[in-house]
Length: 121
Image 1 (spheres, rainbow, N blue to C red):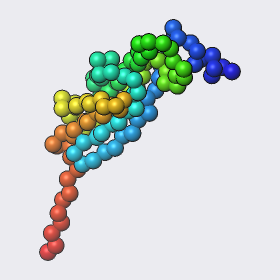
Image 2 (image 1 turned 180 degrees about the horizontal axis):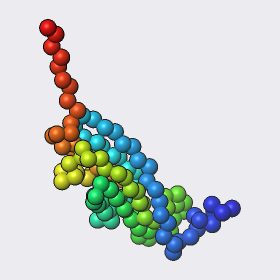
Image 3 (image 1 turned 180 degrees about the vertical axis):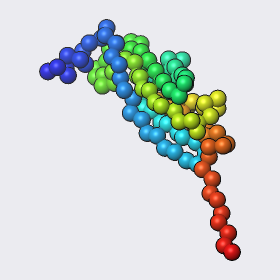
């Protein structure tokens, strides 16, 4: 019953936690966040002092009529991450396509994994 009440609230902003996948390569860290209904102009990404903050606002309302069923909630997506020293924060890029935010966090040249060849005598 409580879940039903939350679904019908229309004037209250909910704080939503987006689902995220993070993967690491030798060159970069890539973060994929599911943020359905968020538009690029309603997205704010900040990196400061080793902390990455993602905030997106979903404000969809039907242009005409009303929802027959609304399972995506209207609210603010919020997520925070700690960024390692190996990330070049000046080269972070972001792309939002079909409700999925892709953040690419390049690693600095001095922090990339490097294999050292071992010679035998």
